[in-house]
Length: 149
Image (cartoon, rainbow, N blue to C red; front, side):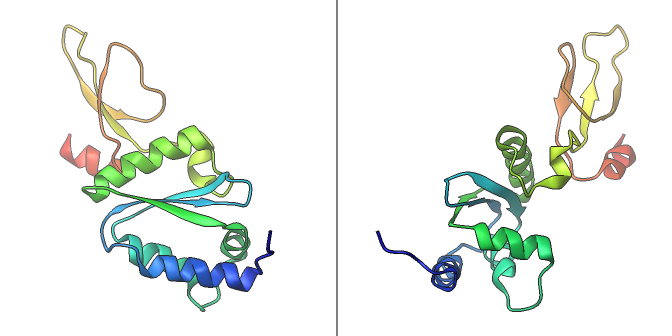
C-alpha cells in the first residue's frame, strides 16, 4: 500500500471537483475510515464544492474538515428544494461531525395540517412529525411559510 500525501489527496479532490455538474444536489464528504463527516446541499454542485478548495483563507473549521476528506460523493437532484430535503434526511440519519447546525435537533420548518380535527388548521411546525397530522416541507425559511399562511 502506498502512502498518499495530503497535497496529492487535495490535488485528486480538486480534479474530481472539476468533473462535477453545475446542477443542484447533495454532497457527502467522507474520511479515511469511510465515515461521512459532512453533508451539504448546493444549487450548483460545482460552484459549492469547489469553494472548499479555493486558495483564499478558509475558516479553521473548514481547513480542519478539508484535511480529513478522503473522497466526496454527490447526488444530483431535480431541484434545490429536493436537495434541501435530502440533505436534512442525511444529516439526521448519519450525524456527520462537521454538521453542527442541524445536529442539535434543530430542523427546517414544515407546514403542519391538523387533518384529523373537526376544524383543521395550518401552522408552522418544527420538530418531530406526529401521527394524525399531515406535513408539507421542509422549507428553508419559516418567514416565507408565515407569509404564505
